[in-house]
Length: 240
Length: 272
Image (cartoon, rainbow over all chains, first blue to last red; front, side, top):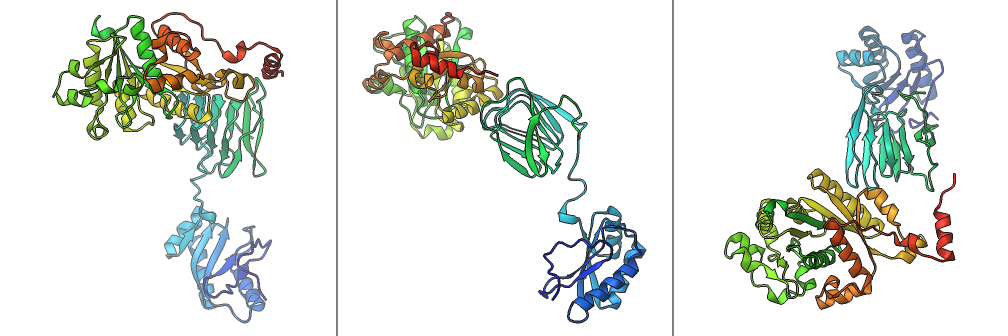
């Protein structure tokens, strides 16, 4: 028996050592979400219980999933020694804390961001607004690293994409991509929102069909993982 | 007339088969009939057929290729129309010409024509590649031809974007092969649907007309034989508007009478 490595594990209080049963990869040492308890005790406990779950003591390479734990050089060094004493070699650290990454680099341990997303990528350049005047015709592609305000239409076959919000003072009938660098809170607003396709961050939706409501600007945003269209709010910067 | 007042007009569409060459031939004849000295330049070197439509194929001795190579004078290459001496055709060279022709060469040809003519109509090839870019280099203004079909409108939109970026101005629109019945029944894109997307002034509206096919095969443009057919009348009106006359463009789908048309119009009206 044992817990498969493909299962998502979120230990509430204690740390968890998940044995790699395929024998090819490394074991996973998962730290709890709360960063309060003393680390050495947690790790000892995890190793002991891991040995109980599996068929004998676990040995080999270990991937540490540190989550939001802020680990210094000394803490990490101690952890490495504790593991080494049990025949375990710390080879990689997965962490969302830049501090931990620095410490890992100091010890010569590989480190990675959770889901390989660097903290700089979901930029929110709310205040930064680029204004572009003129209609985007078929084949045109307007792309900015900020939010964009287009004074004109986006014709079928044209594309507009921005790292922030996409605002169209005109008819949006082509393709729009807001938050193209991963910002889930980005929105698409247009006086007439009838695009062929909408994209916000990683979500994709086909445009609505039928006649648009006259005289109302519309806004698309992500609600519960899906793109939803509502009447637009007359506020700037867009928030909430 | 001074060369500076010559109008260099590109006739283009993006999509093939929408009626660029037919418009060029008819417009050329109509303008010539109205007294303007007109040259039509076939820039579709790969698939030339403006000479066929004008019925001048068997009179071609030299082409633009020889003029550029300076093996003949421009006057030798120009083919005057049989019935309309105001109209002359400068034929395209062989398809191989495409490989070495540069935008500068087209400008050179157009400038030479400008010395003798009031209008230089340039029949662009379909597509947006080299051939089209060569043709565009010689033009100052443009007429975009499209049909009320989604694909033709999409391609026209792309072409307009390219013309804008090259500073070709003004750009006017001719909507070709319109079927009023289908438009009234909303089985075809309406005039406003097209002008909404392309946002260009409408220079003319040409109805679908079987006579166009007959005239093409005969090599006698409709505008040459008289104003009997609807398409012929439309082409003549395009020429007159181009000369600055004020002739209103009538939306045929709005013109239809009868109960069915009225119902159709009623359904088009949006109530909110």
